[in-house]
Length: 244
Ligand SMILES: Nc1nc2c(c(=O)[nH]1)N[C@H]1C(S)=C(S)[C@@H](COP(=O)(O)O)O[C@H]1N2
Ligand SMILES: [Mo]
Image (cartoon, rainbow, N blue to C red; front, side, top):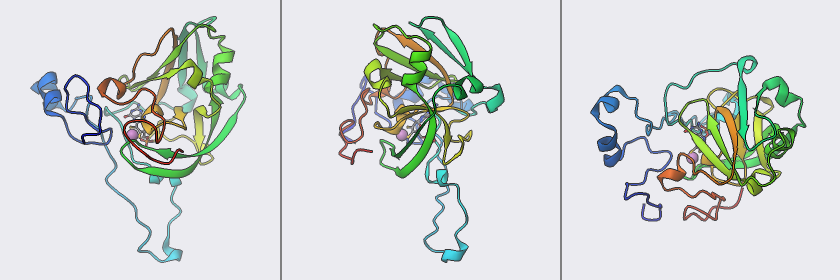
């Protein structure tokens, strides 16, 4: 654990750890803890569906998104149907706006197939995504050319993330509406999630609710807890993974 960055002398958690640090328990108070409402709680799917012991004919048609582990820092997360979903875009933009799924579909669509890697080590190879490049959204909302960063928020009410404007304009950072050729499921962060392909999974915010164009970076949920803001796979967080 010594390679993990520490923030505020807090025992660092890894984004998959289903436990509380001692300090977080003390800080939050027993009432909230007893109620199970602590934001630091991370849920993780317990089933690891192994097909290796089965005969080829018995292998079920699993959605390949089953290779992902389910993470959320809060439960429950409201389920929002695609038809009801909207996101806000505000801050340093020409005009603040609210976009629906139909609005996203009206923007240029981009597909991207990349490995997905969590900072805790698990990796899913060659995941096909599609949606709208953040770059294309920024052009649409006429973001201020002097703006330095994006703050991205989740409709889970807790999680947030950051991108520098240079990062946000890359061609591998997507507002994803589909994966494996199907709508992004609730479990995977649908109807709409972020995919920051070249960075560790915590940058890929699930349950997208809003984008705020800002002058400077506001560190995101895990970044305030010691993880690198610039989370390049293999070049951050003390890790040496192959780039995705
Ligand atoms: N809203 C929200 N987004 C999130 C997280 C989270 O807890 N809440 N976890 C992050 C982490 S650490 C990873 S690795 C990926 C995991 O995505 P998955 O749950 O679809 O596997 O989501 C990221 N986005
Ligand atoms: Mo992660």
